[in-house]
Image (cartoon, rainbow, N blue to C red; front, side):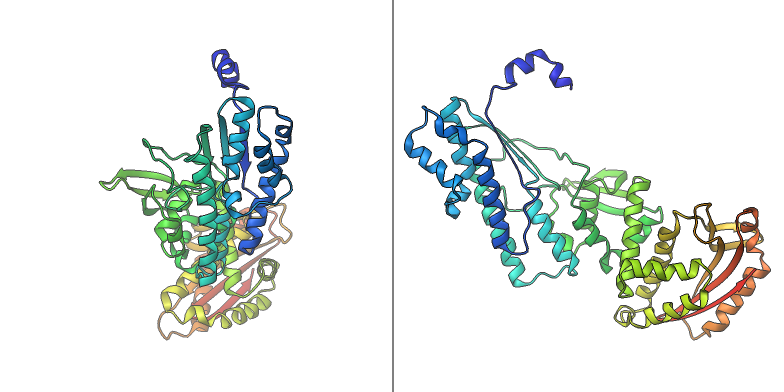
Amino acid sequence: MKIGEDQKIMSEYFGQYPVIFVCFKDIKGLTYEELEMGIRNLIHKLYVAHEYLLQSTKIRETKKEDFRKYLIKEFDLSELKESLLTLSELLFLHFRKKVILLIDEYDTPTNDWYAKQLARGGNASDEDELYLQKILLLFGGLFSKALKGNDYLEKGLVTGILRVAKANLFSGLNNDGELKAYWVGTASTALIENALILDKFQEEIQILSNDGSVEMIADPKMVFADIKSSPNALYNLLLFSGYLTAERSLENEDATYSCDVKIPNREVRGTFKGSLEKWIAKKFNLEVRDYNAFLNDLLKGDVTTFSEKLKSYIAVSTSFYSSGPKNAELFYNGFILGLISAVSSQYFVETEKESGLGRADLILIPKPVAKYKNALILEFKFSKGEEDLALLAKKALEQIEAKNYATKVKEHDAVEKILKVVLAFRGKDVDVAFKEG
């Protein structure tokens, strides 16, 4: 709006240059052939939009023959890489002015590739790596010819969903001066979501989801490929795409920054907590809808069914627990945070708050919109020794009674029933004790 009000800028630039605009946001494919075909179709449509050039008296017939190849989709791979350069030349010949080239979401194909790898656990096959290299060669050639070897270019602007860094797409371009990073608010959702449900990132993800902060090194030269293996690379991705914000930042000698990062707002926190639900459901070998149905057994007061399902789900997750007790605790902590996330829209959630004579781990109090009017007082106990889990759960249930944890719940008139539930864990073993009233 401000630019439109500036008469000098408008008279000098508005409508003064031919413009090529190309957006790659829909360029994805299960195979390289599908992806290349998508680019060919995109270039074809771009040329159709400039079909008026065939009527130009300023363009030689031989050049028009080059144009027609793109109209009828009869151009080879080398001509595909030269397509933006060729169109720039034709527009220059017709208008006698250099072109403005705008390239949007150039990194969609690579983002999509990395998202697929993360969805598979971060392990790429030789075939996957070959697919990526073909993508980089194609786009590297296309952008190099259009932006560097282009005598008909006035200015070019390239924007991506994520940070440009060592993607091998722009190695052929001149790098004059220093370019600061500018970020758009909509990152590659699939890439983020797939990264958040990997085991290797869960400890920090859970800290962040629970309003905590994590130390990291912010590196403007982040290497995309490192996201598969490096938590710090993931935090760079999250920071630079707006999913995290820096509380403290100290510049280091190597042009990186030491930061404490946290989740910036409620909406993003919802994304993180939603990822925890998906992670737990994945561990239980469940679809998210089935996982939510499992939680509903607890909310409606059918603790017996909930307990039986919990034991059976944990039993099939043996591969997770075989790696040691730390991962088991990580799983259960994620389970608790995922539970909070799943019910927070219908329940008031109190975590480790003073109630009566002591502290309850988790208190769920139904809101007026809640389907079930049961309040739940939940205690989670973890044993690393040989203590009897049933006895541990029973003692914890007695503690709830003795310390009057129900005080907080009784303040709410809408509550129809109070359920006191203890879940005692050790490795992949669990015991549940509960009582009404």
